[in-house]
Amino acid sequence: MLCILALISAIAPLSTDMYLPGLPIMAESLDTSAASVQLTLTTFMAGLGIGQLIIGPISDGIGRRRLLLGAAAITTLASAACALAPNIEFLIGARLIQGLSGGAAIVLARACIADRARGNGAAKLFSIMMIIGGVAPVVAPLLGGVLLGPVGWRGIFWVLTAAGAVMVAGVLTLVPETLPPERRHGGGLKALVANLGYVTGNRRYLGYALAFIFGFGALFSYIAASPFVVQNVLGLTPSQFSMVFAVNAVGMVAAATITARLLGRLSARTLLNFGVALLTISGAVLFCTAALFNSTNPAALLIPLFVSVSSIGFIMGNATALAQGEVTAAAGTGSALMGAGQFGLAAAVSPLVGIAGPDTAVPMAIAIPTFGLLAALSLALFARKADAAN
Image 1 (cartoon, rainbow, N blue to C red):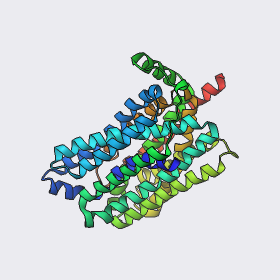
Image 2: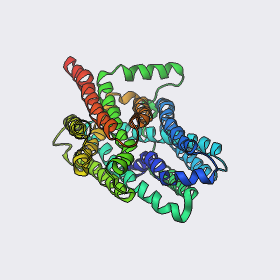
Image 3: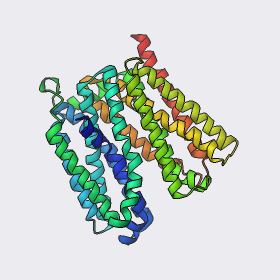
Image 4: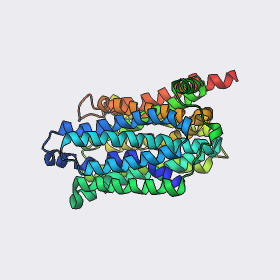
């Protein structure tokens, strides 16, 4: 069950990273501009956020399994539609549907775990799911590059269709209903407003959720800027960039693995604090190197960048578990708000880290420690005050 939920959670990086190598060929194949092809990424990211925001609260009223099965099925069909797209307008629409259904599947997968586990146990499960799902950012760009030649960009979407079919089969056979009828809320606008009020009124939830969102903001700053920083600023080749990307992803997965092993001896909150501190300090070193000293030495930039990316492995699983543990009565709504904030911030970060052009690392070096500081402030202003009040 955990492996299937991890695969579902990995649909975002798989659907984002696998087809990126084929963007120039797609523009030529569909007789359109590069900007129009890039819009397929924007609509997918927007769909991810909107899908989570809609389906999460609904699932608190009617349960998870039926919605999860429907979302997985629609994701599969949307991937097939992308593969068959006759023009760019059709592809943009199919990517939006793929994002909406993929976002719904992600929020439901997270809610299924929150229904079943609490405290350090939940943190361990979320960390294990992150380990499994963390393979996707490592494999996806490499797999996309390998597949592009033999099967083309349409073949990549057929591979995503096959992954969707595995998701559907996995939900059918391995994922039971995790929210029993007695724990569900009545439907309608009144129940939705009540759930939103319950979730946003919990200060500790807000602190942990914001730490999660800002941690992802730091990660996406790296994802959006690193192709230009590594190749244009540091002068490395595309294949060397793929190796740097893979090594950093391995560091993040290794941190999540350490988290899973330490939980029980250390609390999820302690590990979260460590991850946020590590992100902020390594980000500050990166800022000094790139912005203050304007260094283009690969080691001087890549070492603090590796530590910053690795620190996310201590943040995401623990912050998710702690936030969800605060709002167990409306886990779907809580997960939806986190997901919407996560991908909404990602959509805003992407143009910001490129605002100074493709030949500088300064915007990324500013963004990463800034998000680390915002995560630390969120924990200090919300979670700790609430703890003291109790």
